Amino acid sequence: MLKDITFGQYIERHSPIHKMDPRAKLMLLILMIVFLFLSHGFAGLSLFVILLFAGIALSKIPLKMFLRNLKAIWIILVFTAVINLFYGSGGVLLVSFWKIHIYSEGVKRAVFMALRIMLLIMLSSLLTYTTTPNDLTDGIESLLSPLRFVGLKNAVHTLAMMMTIALRFIPTLVEETEKIMNAQKARGADLEDGKLLDRIRALIPILIPLLISSIRRAYELAEAMECRCYNGGEGRVRMKRLHYGKVDLFAAITCVFVCVGIILANYYINF
Amino acid sequence: MAKIIEVENLTYAYGDGSAFVHDAISDLSFSIEKGEILGIIGHTGSGKSTLVQQLNGLLKPTSGRVLFDGKDIWENPKEIRKVRFQIGLVFQYPEYQLFEETVFADIAFGPKNMGLSGDELTERVKEICSVIGIPESYFETSPFDLSGGEKRRVAIAGVMAMRPQVLILDEPIAGLDPKGRRDVVNMVAEYRKAYDATVLIISHNMEDMAMLADKLLVLNDGKLLMYDETRNVFSKPEVLREAGLNVPIVTRVFEELKAKGYDVPTDIFTVDEAVTYLSNRKAGGSRA
Image 1 (cartoon, each protein chain N blue to C red):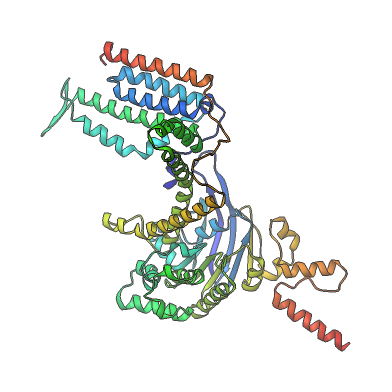
Image 2: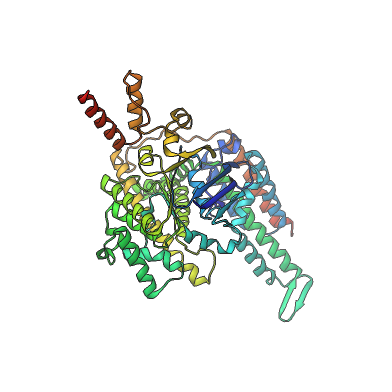
């Protein structure tokens, strides 16, 4: 169950997408998400589908890995789709019983919303699958570095370090959670059955040991960092410097084309 | 003696059907007699922990069966929790699973899950604590205020309180000081004596195994390499070394002595045996 969470898990491949600068990937992803939400219709979304599949093909990561991330949010997908199903009131009346009326416009809207969330998740996965967590935080740190001009000198570095550490500990904590769950199951804890309240109560024997060991780990890590003379971002140099390359330029141009395409689609194609 | 656990062609594959599948355990078959102390040894990643999790139904075998008292433990998957009460598993560093406010409540967690309550529950906890020597004065203290060795003992008591017929301990004395080790070894012995239990111990430490186990089961890459009396296993150092293991240090000392030309046996496996042998020899030598 816990192993299904693949967010923030880097998959090593040699591909142009992997070679891109994390800053470029981050900025382009944000740009794409903004335009994803600006897009009015299926014509616009189809551009994103093409972009996404081109990206997946280039990344050399199997499509299955992307679909797996969707599995984790299927409830949200279904929920959004169902809610929207009853919303639109244009087009042909398809189903009508009691107080429920479903119009063709509603169906279109439901599919549109679900597709948009799927694209959002899969585009984001393209970033997390092809970028190591460390590169990602380096990128974020570098992108946020202008904040030092507004008096947040150490904050950016601290924030980036916190994110690096948080990401680094996700797999450790997942493993730890599994261990504790097994240990409590061996003591007869029933985690699968029971009413909602019982299930919530059944989490206590897992959460408390997890919390305690997280605090313990935090102390140990802080001590280990101090032993290596860590004192914040001041004067630290990087082993790996970030450089924009040709791939980034090419990706940026592609994304700009998509953006132009969306604007045109929004104005001229009403579907 | 009666067989309490039988393992038939047990195979367990990790992975989700994708490219990462590999057998953690392949085609294991063996049986455990009631009342014995069995040691399970093998290098890191040899499948020891996977194996014991199959024995109490935390993992379901990919193929093969585990029989407890002659019955397949997965015969009725809904009843698998009952198997876990009969075959108690103490994980590595069990002190990290403590969570209750008081020692008493934590030890009572297992029996409570079995459905005990009220006086019966209190009696159960008191009984197990008196058997294994946890004083009642600890009951109202927080488990987090105890020392490392005491925490470990309380955590193990939490599994023993379910009164399992088979007790499995994964590296029970790793990371403890000598007193802590002695205490844990003693409590396991007391438990075994009081309830006529079968005990399985996983360890990397050959010295501990020589001291504790009647029989040894040696795993190598998920396969059964040897399953024999402890003495017989330790008398095949070549096989053990091939599996990334070794004989106890005392035995190695005697091997070295023999290689240097001294006339000594190499079937000395514990420090006590060595002391007895050497003092006998000294006594005999001075007489001659």
